[in-house]
Image 1 (cartoon, rainbow, N blue to C red):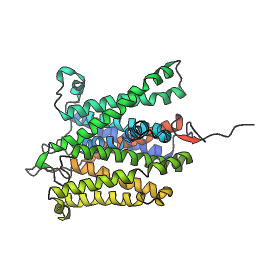
Image 2 (image 1 turned 90 degrees about the horizontal axis):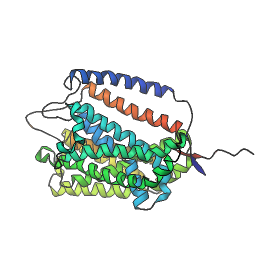
Image 3 (image 1 turned 90 degrees about the vertical axis):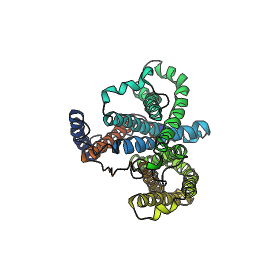
Image 4 (image 1 turned 180 degrees about the vertical axis):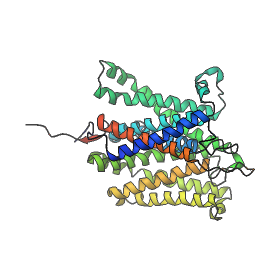
Length: 381
């Protein structure tokens, strides 16, 4: 039997100290960005008004954070409540991913002091896909905080508040499934607007659907990856059994995703672009190769009984599908007039700092709050 309880253990470990050092370096570059502006810290230009912070931290990072969304769809829409023990860790990951993705938008926009205008109805452009993305991500961050609140109340109980929250929690669960469906597809809609500037290897009228499928895939893959790692670190055999069942769903979704993408590119007569030997073609082959390796590793029932193969499959899917979304925003995008983009050191360090905050925050919370389903403690006679 398993129970949700804090994993315990020392917080200030060597990896934790290294993570803090990365965060401090990122803080120096962040201070430079807010003092001197975007130019001295980033490689962005008039051709590429977005860079690593949007392409990775928001576009890929929020998709990595879709574990809570993917598990909620599986549990509440398909009535697969046997996966419930995986929901709390998934919501925790989603909470960090989305809040830090929203923070990345804050440091990316030039007039960050005007960001509050998104929430003022008289400034809203309801026809803008970007407005929908900004509003949905901000609202979803609030929803995730509320969904995670019962875990906090287990450690710091407040009289009647947990009971009252549980009575209305279904409303936020429903919002938690609606909002990612909207903004994850809208992130694809943004690149539909790029038209001929985006390579046919990634441009498609189906981009909103492809981005939504990619978010679901990354959601399942990150749950499998994190749960497998947690099981190795914190000894959670109960969660590992559930992951084996969850991994049987992924090959179907991933197989359909790959077939639909190849057929879509072939229908545009652009499949030959993948074999031209240029950067875009090579990156396309790498993303497809990673997805196919992940699919082959997890498709065979015998492999799904091997935690190592399941872990490697999840990693390949994370890299392959994540690279698909990154390529669609950076590698496949050509604004013309010779514009090029490569992230500056400051962008890279700030992104590494954001990733470090997410990892350290996750580790601290699972050690102090009842998030993971751990084996029950033996009862004293």
